[in-house]
Length: 179
Image 1 (cartoon, rainbow, N blue to C red):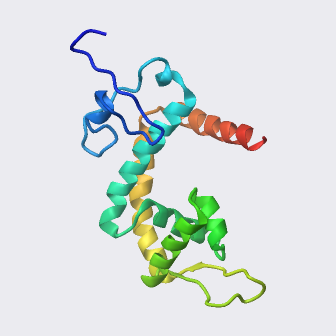
Image 2 (spheres, rainbow, N blue to C red):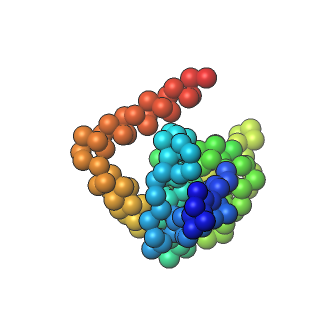
Image 3 (cartoon, helix red, strand yellow):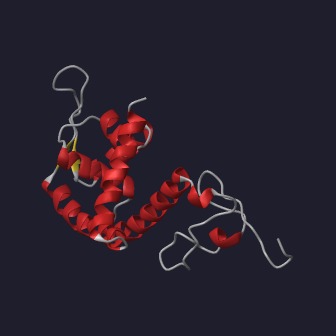
């Protein structure tokens, strides 16, 4: 490496101590970062999936923030629309967050009237959570933004490439879930 070159190291959280990553990669409107990384990380599936996830999360956060939603709140509402009556623990698993984090999300959505949760369990200990009409209306607006982001991502591929990628990701998930 010459004296004018710098090479950053990337941590598990996706931050860095130098190089293109520190220049603002992943933020909306930031210069585009190269896909390749020091060594062979640019060709490692886990690294590339994490970079794609980080870019998607950043873009979703920027589009959802004006609606007063965070990504975990959006995921919670979408899960409740698709499967009403889930518990806090089920929503946490579906949203890839801890039960404690999801509890804070649920309380915030409940205080805004976007979801309902009974004070006492109708039977057993289960407290089923439901999305309200207000929650559905906000989710519809948010979902339009998220679907636009997804379409933008898939537009980078031709139709066959997009289908192949979706099929391939599904195959990877099934393979890892088998263990």
